[in-house]
Length: 309
Image 1 (cartoon, rainbow, N blue to C red):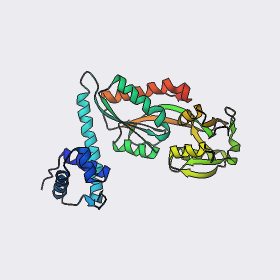
Image 2: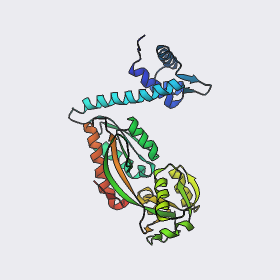
Image 3: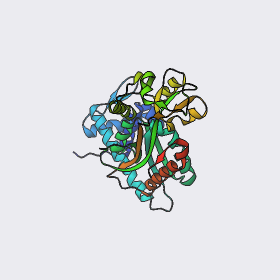
Image 4: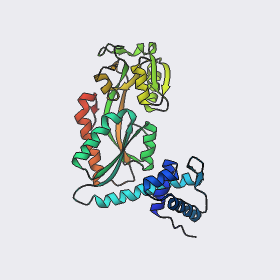
């Protein structure tokens, strides 16, 4: 028996999974809920298996439904890429682009990137995401992202990689807790109560390697998976953290935090720009990559970045 599914059904299905609700998806898609339910039932009948578990509060995917959702996202994304490639032949770049960065880079990069595209290429629709580095890495490998900025990795997978920037990791504390710009001795870190990103955050893994390589002791009081929460905990005087200046520049400038370099400067992070190896870049993708490089160069002095582009 043939499979008669269409792209519209797949896009409906993915939206239902994302919202975990038929009624919410119907409202977002502007489709009557009974009609949406019939589409999903037809999809289940066509595939010969249940795709959704219906609860009183909403829906969740069955194992088969999760497999379909993963494949549907890739298929829909590739369809969009094909559409954008055709659109790119027009005089002005258009279409959609998805770009992801780690949470510590979201504030320095994403607003500037959005403003630049709104001014210079308003027909390009941007989807901007931030998250933990491992999540961003997975999203670009799966094809969910066109371009991403990641920590340098010796085995990044099937990605085209371009060095972007290097930046030092600083000691960060509440206002008045550090006598910046006086450096903090790396040997004194063990005396400070630390609040750090939880493993497997890439910065935390770098700190673990620092401890091994230099025999440092870190007095970690709290592991936290939220950058805004971590910064608020440090601001309120609960402890210190280790972060690049770009992640705290605004709070240092307005006096809520202080940041001091390490002596010796034993810890740096190198970031690279990546895109999927099997995806042919469009004109819009090229513009996105050039815009990212331009922003890095222009903001490097203020954010203490060393551009590698």
